[in-house]
Each structure stands twice: as C-alpha cells, then as structure tokens.
Image (cartoon, rainbow, N blue to C red; front, side, top):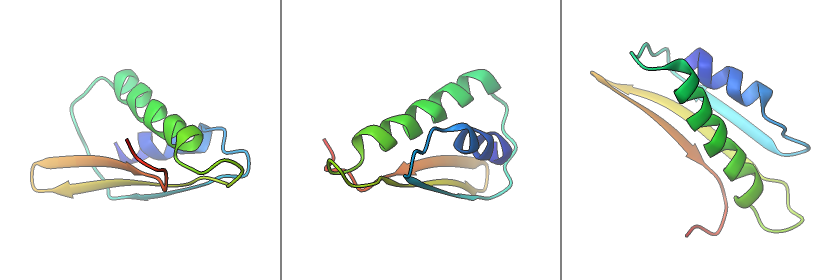
Length: 81
C-alpha cells in the first residue's frame, strides 16, 4: 500500500503545489486499481479544493499501521465542509 500511495502522489499533477507522503510499509489485501483510484481522487480533490484561491495547496498523505489496521489519510489546509 505504501508503494501504491507513493506512486499515486508521484503521478499527481502538482503544478506548483506541495504534496508530502509519510508512509509506513503496509501490506493489504485489496484491489490495487480501486485503491489507486480512491487515493488519486482524494489527492486530486485536495489539490483543487484544499486551498484558498491563488494560494498553492499543501497536502499531506499518511499511511499508518496500527496492529491489523491500516489507514490512509489525506490532509489539506482547505476550509472544510
């Protein structure tokens, strides 16, 4: 999962925005295409909507492992919902 997340971020169109990844090694059983699509959508939305107009986005993607649970978090500095 960590490698997939890092690959998605590398492929994201950052265009002057900053995306950082903090990923612990994680192995999960899942459809890699669906996970890739979900992470790409979250990162893409954060880059577009997670910032004030005219300000570069700052997005942080984290892969955390806690026992048998693995969490992917995408955080931005946007106004929220």
